[in-house]
Length: 439
Ligand code: CO
Image 1 (cartoon, rainbow, N blue to C red):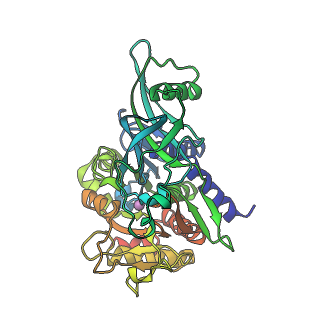
Image 2 (cartoon, rainbow, N blue to C red):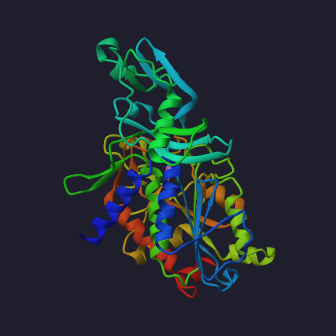
Image 3 (cartoon, protein in one colour):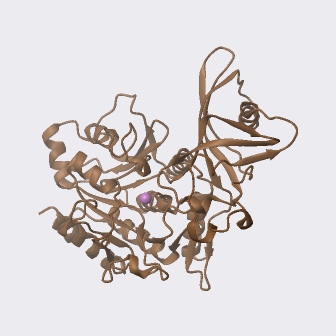
């Protein structure tokens, strides 16, 4: 198999096996362990580890992986990449079971800015983290994934809603409740959960389930499509594509560089949490890497963060939604995101750095700026830059249908982003590009 096809297959497999941020972190931990990275825990006493390759997981969901040369990173700086692990979706309510006549349904909350219309008529499964007590009262938690389709949110027939194609609105409380069964027998949701835990963890004793973080997801797997294998379509391209590409690039870069990747959940809901980009995770890590205050400031002054999150690609049916001179095209290379009001952290030096990096990697970066008459989104770049003072560039592959249950990106852009990030993590301390941004 061609290396490029293999890389695409690895990405699609990773996304398919990562229905929730918990699963994504779990998958990446396995990958890192297989590649010889050593696990460190925040609850242990360690500082300035290295030389070597390490990773840290925070509260089962935020992940940082890094390689350290053993030389002081305060003289070299850190090549840092960041991305978010979460995607908009439907999250189960704490007490979700509801019965209408003979139909059993599960109530959900909308997580993040989901494009809700795309959730109707999909074959949905359920996955996430469950917490339970055993007979001795001890608390355990574990990941579960039903994997098979267990529910659907049926659309209302057009005969019962004649304006569905012109005036459709969606009531988040009443219209989006997934349907699980139609049967005379009532079913108890906690019993179903208990069965699933026992199936996945045959040795555990579940006395009582005491909590769950469970999310519905589309069971249709991500796929390579297009007349010339142009596109990748699937759930969670925003932003598992960036997470995978960063970790893969770090793994493939030489060990003799100071480099770090941080992946946070909760970006889609504002990043304010213990594990989100506005939380203390990265700052705590940086303190462990360099406990001396002044030396740490020197290290950060020489560091650069590439914040990777999907960008808006030009949609051929809606070209009026874009600034006509800033139209990122699919399969034409990674995008640098700019915003005068700091919704993106890019500045002339960091944007220029990324453009030069892409050129050396064999591609040309594209530029995105939102129209002035439309509101601009944001990402972890400005938050991480503000929390740490690290100079930052916001980039990502152009995508269509952002926050849809199936998003579309260019297959070539994914590979080009990978080439650029691998080059970034490989930059020699004396390289003119790496030296250049430090002046
Ligand atoms: Co995103």
